[in-house]
Length: 288
Image 1 (tube, rainbow, N blue to C red):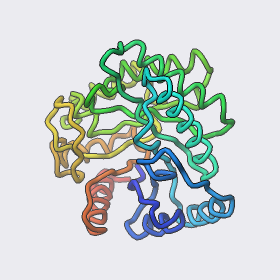
Image 2: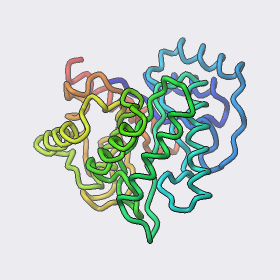
Image 3: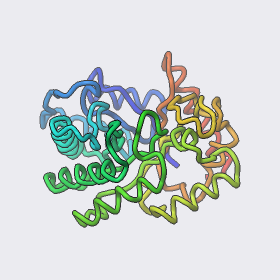
């Protein structure tokens, strides 16, 4: 497994690569713009080319772009839904320009009056519209969620329904997959701390979605208890999943080919260095 962090683009895309190198990244995830705004400064061809060169030289592979926080692809409000689809489409274009492998998104959340079936269908339709609008090799990865406040994607069953909806409308199999967030899965009730729990979780994922659709791991520990539906990340090995659980996951042969992106709390760069040293130590102990 290759390791990386979600990196800040606040000082520019090339500086992001420099930051990744300082803290030992082998892979990376970024936002392509301010994640708390609907508007975005265009990415120039020159800026994208410089980023490509820096990233190639640094060997950061793969690269994921994360969709901003504001879009809700399940919204029953037509104006918000339209804005959300437009944001997804724009970010797919930006991810392609930046040479990203993946665009990761949270599916959205239900409104009070909204049924589950309708919400899942609307997410599927939103993704189809973006895929049909943009001719790109970037793969969209649906991220599982902790299940806070009506979040969709809390179970593999829900994710499977959305993926099937997308495939049935767009035939987009090669361009749709899954990002597994370990902290979210734990908070949703999937035991990733024990050997038996990990085996059951991955078997269920394989049965409902297929391990071949798993494109990325968000390698996060959790401050929340199992099944509490709270999205509270912890430094790797310092939360409720714990060092034994995450170290075992990192060493699983079925996951060797994937990247583990950490979205860990940080006060200083020293926190990132400590987390990176820890996961690389787990990898070495696995003999690869």
